[in-house]
Amino acid sequence: MGGRCPALTGGMARTPRAVRVVVRWRAGPTWTSGAVDEQPGWDEHAAFIDDLVERGIFVMGGPLADQSGSLSLLENVSEQEARELVGEDPFVANGVFELEEVRAWNVFVDELSSEPSA
Image (cartoon, rainbow, N blue to C red):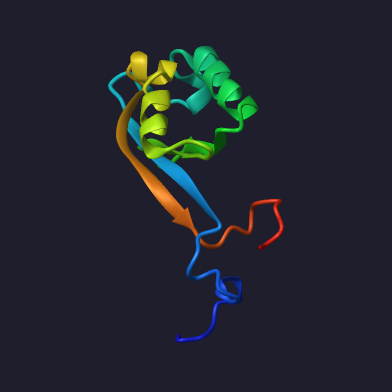
């Protein structure tokens, strides 16, 4: 403990590399016990997510391992814009997902990004 974190050296600890938005969902009343692609409205949900990916907004997402909900990671939108966007997800309209939380996230370490460090 108390060791250095190489990813945070060089001033990065003061300035986030990115501000992203984390969306936390809980399973809604129509979530079935099957896999996510077996949920009602899967095709519409998948098309909605594909559009967000193409627009450079949806970065990462998927169900929690215990199937109690899902997490999504968005970028290039504000917290409010994200809240409005995810409300349009067909999984929300049909009750597969219930929005639990939308939060802006200051990312300091991002080893998944293909962008070089500043």
